[in-house]
Structures are given as C-alpha cells and as structure tokens.
Length: 69
Image 1 (spheres, rainbow, N blue to C red):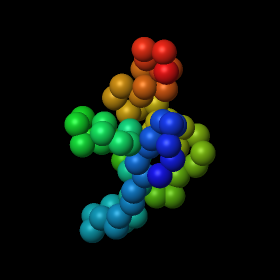
Image 2: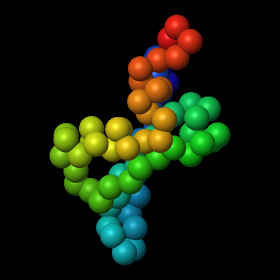
Image 3: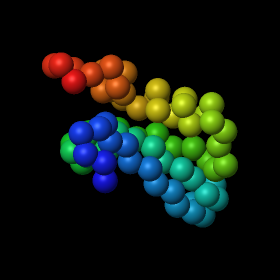
Image 4: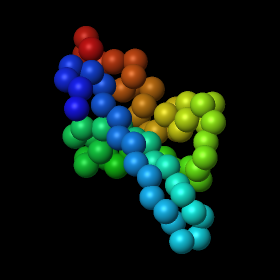
C-alpha cells in the first residue's frame, strides 16, 4: 500500500482457454465502485502495459488529476 499516491490494481490468473492472463485497473475505492480494468494474455511488453493503462475507463482524468490533485 502506498499512501498519498494514485493507486493501481494488478493481478493475474491462469485461464483454462487462454493460459496466463494479466489484469490492470484503477485501484482503491475505484476498483469496487467502477471495476475499471483491462486484461491481456501474458507475457506482455512494456508498450502493451502502457496501452492497458490508457484503456482503463476514466484513466485519463484519474492520472491528470481533478480538484487540485
């Protein structure tokens, strides 16, 4: 846990059909409220990881800050 910073959630699992998959999303209360996540089949490159972050619904506003953040 990191305090006073933006939070991300990162997870992975083994899917019977696709094999290892990776999940990235907004963390903290946003995870439960909006479930803003994206998935990829592993392994992924650095550019794919960056794409995943940009795909998350609301991520642009989240990372640019709001109300003085």
